[in-house]
Image (cartoon, rainbow, N blue to C red; front, side, top):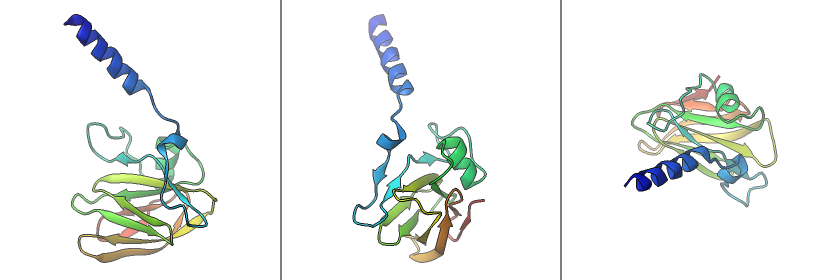
Length: 148
């Protein structure tokens, strides 16, 4: 019995201490776009496995949580009841769950990209326009604004 517990603890520690490099954590949203978008590792705002550090801005999230200083477009959904869909021009949709933060990076860097944000439950448009690098958007299900 003690050996079984010992093996479980060692295996748990190995799993907890191993992390994939950022490139291995990323996935391309759509390959056919001239500027493919790479989805970065997401983080929930509140759960037992959430980020212990809640960011006050998109820039802070990119620098403190993702450890990057360029090519980071963060999206925060503060709604407790509604998902938010972020659609990129000809490049797919990023679905952001309730109380969730997600981020993308562009394969070919640009300082801003055009997005359309919508609430899939109410079928309403909540934002359309440019999103800036290291700023992103913060949304609440009814509206979005730059996350700065």
